[in-house]
Length: 71
Ligand code: SF4
Ligand code: SF4
Image 1 (cartoon, rainbow, N blue to C red):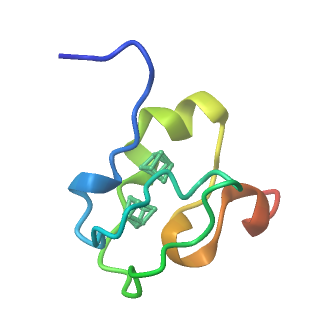
Image 2: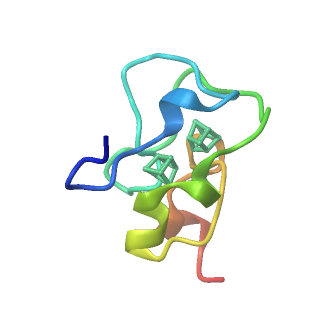
């Protein structure tokens, strides 16, 4: 069932570790405190990525879309 708002899919990602945060692509979230290993990233198929025209991956480790710069 699709929600009205696009939702973060980090929870299904192989790199994901639960420590209270998701949606790392946004500047306000910042990097994850517990995700350290890049084991795959689902961001390219995330509806949030599409909606906000983000163009990077591994926000949890590398920082928000803004922090990673224009591409
Ligand atoms: S682009 Fe990645 S970090 Fe951002 S909401 Fe989607 S899955 Fe989460
Ligand atoms: S930002 Fe990418 S790599 Fe990190 S948890 Fe979300 S989908 Fe996985």
